[in-house]
Image (tube, rainbow, N blue to C red; front, side, top):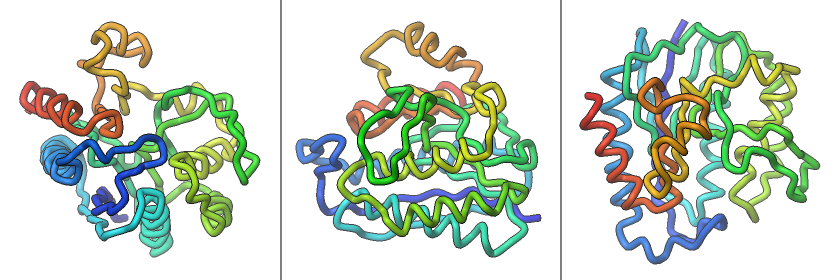
Amino acid sequence: MKNYLIKSLYHIKNKNWQVMDRSHEVDLHENYLQMHDISCASFDQYLQGNWELKFITGEFENISQAFEYTHWMISKYWHQGNCNILYTDPDTVCQKPTDIFNKFDKFMMFNYTEPRTFDQPNPYGCYFENFFNAGVRYFPATMDRKLWGLGNTLATKWDHSTYDTEQLILNAMLWRQKVTLEQVLHPEIAYQAPRLPVISQQAQDEWNGVAMSESHIVHVHGSRDSAVKLNLMKQIRESTK
């Protein structure tokens, strides 16, 4: 059984990321390069088990195309057979020994995104009372192969007009498993920090339902301001390595 940690980093020509215009972020790509390096170093230190890094990269006109490419590359690796895949975004930092491989038999995403629900019009007719974040996701060898049939069918009609398409497809896969919220919600594995450092640590902990210091992986949400979030990643890494 092979275990893969998949990381991705792309050069995106268009700085309008649909969720926000990032043209004012002069060092956007350089900031993400630094986040990626910090992230890789943290997982190299703390991700347990025997695993191999797979790095996906390239250049795309917009961020949506990069998300779609990531989807198809993960699907390709999984369908090669007999492997567990952990994917983590470049703006994630692993801060303590983390054992994920072979610990879950279903596809997992671990924690909410913000906002926690999704009720916007979309071409897939997907609406979610519990909307999970895609920054940390786990595709075990034991997951139902039919989930990829669903995900890939939706992906062939990728909606490039919105930032949300990737998370919509992955949430469709997650909840098709007919799992309960209690089965899939593990904020201690993937702590979300979308509003740090603007809000207090206590407030962000309350949103997650767990203290950041008790969590394994922190997703800083680099899309909220890459320079600010890079500094946050540096602080977390320096205090935990």
